[in-house]
Amino acid sequence: MKKLKIVLADDLSRDSSIALQRSESLKKWGIFLSNRLKSSLELVHADAHLGTAHLATKEYQKLAKALHFKEKKGIDKDGLLKGKKVQYHYLSGHPVDALVAFFKKKPQASLVLFGTHGYTGAKKLILGSVSEELARYIQLPLFILGPHAISTKIPKDSSSLVVYIGIDVESEVKDQILKSIQLAKKLKPSKVVLVYNLFENLHPVIQSVLGTKKGQEKLKELVESLKEKAHLKLSKIQSQFNKNSLKTEILIDVRLISAADAILDAISSNEGSIVFLKKSTKGMFKKTFLGSTTRTVILESKTPVMIF
Image (cartoon, rainbow, N blue to C red; front, side, top):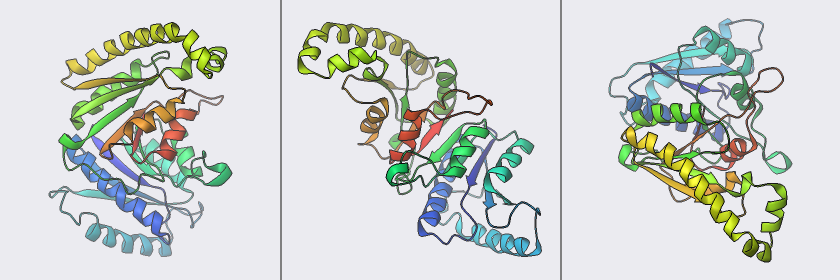
């Protein structure tokens, strides 16, 4: 990877302690990843308050200059950059418009980082509007820090890093596997865990029958047969990772839970981890929409999520 860019979609005023914590956490992850991937690092700020009429007013330039000075002094408090230079970009206008335009002009970026606050209550499965739009329009691998992941521990080195890959062997995963291997080879985690949920791919009628104790007994042989078939497919994927010197384990969850819950359970005991997931499919206007599993994991996970 030649470039690594951190995208901070929160406003420049930083009037929220949570927004500030998210920004600080993103910077630390950005430094960690840029060191592991041996890539350059750029910070991109988009300001939501100045409108889209002008690229840079005098007031905006003054604010950006002050923030630039503050950033340079505070980004590497722990000395992790090891002398690496960081480029800064300050964009005025609506965050989505400004950031999408920025990445169209600079398509050489290979990885984008940003955070999302999500929503609470009835809207708890909805990402923040900026994050949702960025995920749709930016056709690059995205590293997303969800609302529960801002305080997660960052691995000191690869020996404490575990990569969990939520995978659906019943769908097309070739591109996901290829990109996962490419990134994992550079991250050099202690291990990779392939997580598959058997229940979510079953026919609704079979799901309903398995919801009862009697049904579980009747369909026990069927479940075992499906588990064996899934394991065979996952073993082939596992061998691809092993060939690239990546220690890989298989985890097939046969409980009556969703794929998202299976992934969240798998990572619950390991904070020093990253989850790799697939974005999902294209919509009517060729926008990429996040699938329900990906969305739920981003919003509920205590670890960052990488989507391809």
